[in-house]
Length: 408
Ligand SMILES: O=C(O)C1=C[C@@H](OP(=O)(O)O)[C@@H](O)[C@H](O)C1
Ligand SMILES: C=C(OP(=O)(O)O)C(=O)O
Image 1 (tube, helix red, strand yellow):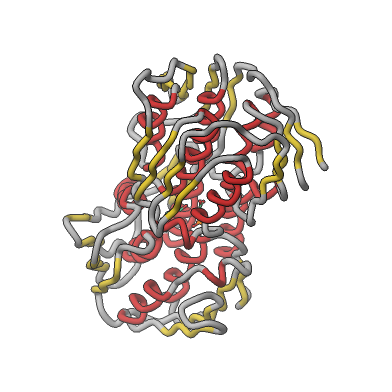
Image 2: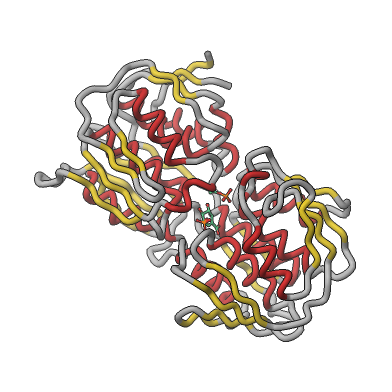
């Protein structure tokens, strides 16, 4: 489905409900498989979480997790210690270009048996589940935190628990803390001090209802919409002031982009406020919240503000090379973007080219990050249904706000 978005001048003030965080859901689904006493509420309706659920219930050897990165990494660890079971994990063409070597080598230190079916270091992989032969591993922490979370999630099921030693600069730290917080909440008391994570063995946990907080990364698109509106107020549920999700940093970041956040009874209300007068360049280090880089870059472009975003080294190995994709698509619209291996610089905008067709590269966040620009110009979004990877209701929710779209 390709969508043409008409230019709109403002939005309808509305309340919407976003489902649970896909990151929290995918962690809790693994934990629930290990500890059936855990109940989960407000589960994410994302494709990635549905695929995770299906994979955990599957009894066949071949499991295809499509584009779901966390599912790929978490399930690699999960099946690797499932003694005696043979599993082949595969995914989309892009998934076969997203590296897993660091995780596979960490699991090999535990005595796990994993072989590459195609290219060394990448899915598809064949896993023969084993009993772990040691209780400590070390791995590089500067490529993806998902490898670390994957090990943490299976750690308590190992006979002696697990000590995980992290080498190098640790990336996407809030996701590691999210894993630790969820473990602690279900009664698995792990620690994360300096470069060492320790998780004890836990045989059973007490029955526990885990209510998933709604997805902050999905909320980012409404921050962008409110920022690009003349006057707007959007209320979204259900959120906590003390979130486990690093992307909750949005509330602070968008203060400088003209959005005020108020919390009331598990809901956030985003209100358009004037832009600070002195804002010339928005400078942000996003190494703790890589998933909102696209949203922020496009908001700045829409507002005509320059930005310099750093800490973006993980963007190259996500659903697409997000740095290249942002540069190409923003430049089609008339912007000027310079990228390095880990940063993006956007120059102050002069004008916007109308009716440009945005390519989405099988990346949900490309579609969702560019859609708010309809408040500044008409544009087209190619393969708009990619949004279902994390937010299947995205286009329906945009309609509620008054966005006008037609298939083309
Ligand atoms: O653990 C998680 O749930 C995630 C960790 C991050 O990945 P990296 O650690 O690879 O940056 C993030 O980009 C991804 O969307 C979800
Ligand atoms: C990078 C993402 O997901 P994953 O790595 O789980 O595919 C994302 O949702 O932006």
